[in-house]
Image (tube, rainbow, N blue to C red):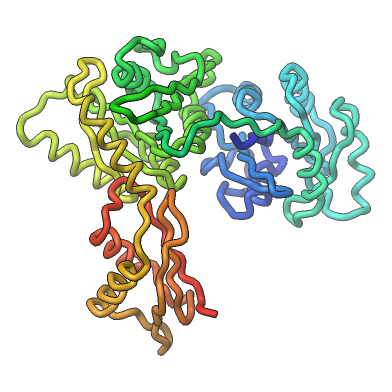
Length: 435
């Protein structure tokens, strides 16, 4: 399990800028207005060959709560999730009452805290950091998010607090899968239906599951592990009022799973949060199955299932490779159809294609739809080979990689999918110049 780092601080100290610097790409929206962060708040970073996940708490929107209450709640969510906390302050403004409020919350957390003073853009400003010793977290690290200064020293200090890597030991044949989805779509009930016993607390109050547990079990000679993510450790209204909390939990489970079950509520239908959560499943590169639960509660005729499937395909175009399973965890109806699909997509995720067969398919594709040209230059494809599984990854050796337009890459992906059974798994295509 990768360590989790949270960036905590009052608004407008530069949390999103630092988040983007550490992640290495512009993921959060950055504007000089307090509370503007609305985009992705969780991503991966790497330092000294150690991978970690990082949370930008500015993106945890608590809604209409008063200003200080929002800061407190965002910090509490980060504290619950994080192994190490970066407490970010603003060197130009000095220590403020809001900084002291955040410090009080962090004292109680008992988590390692590394204090960073942002907006120290040149050496002459370094004297401004000394006031921050008063916050009681030891040495403040001067940094500049806008110029990228001091981040190495900061990350060195953060990495010293990373816990030892401990991972549950399962053999390669064991299929690890997790269930993700917004609260109350029936994840716990589905786990119980699969296990055939009441192993997980089930309630109709959103977010009642108290813990995340790996549940190993066997069926027909195949070993499985269910990584259950349904809610856990809720702290009153905080987690019920922020949909992004369920995303944080889901991401930690996705990281460890081979197959991700995106669970939808057939009775309520699709809402925007479902698409966000499904987007994380797709980005992970894991095998994905869309599971429509509570199908027993839907009034239906012979067209209903097809119409619902068309609706899913319209909303989840990025998951066009994911099979859809309709079932009812409550009545156990159609639950027997799920495990064979899990087996299938797991197998497809590890499928290896012979190089000569693969090249025949690619050459046929090029003959059918010639490669694109750009500014008088035509893309030439010399050779293709599969270099990885989970997800299946193909390197296409070409004359100039920048000539590989997205639309042509998509065309090649579709031809590969037509020729081989990659249902349920994303596939990656990498264009590389031939030496």
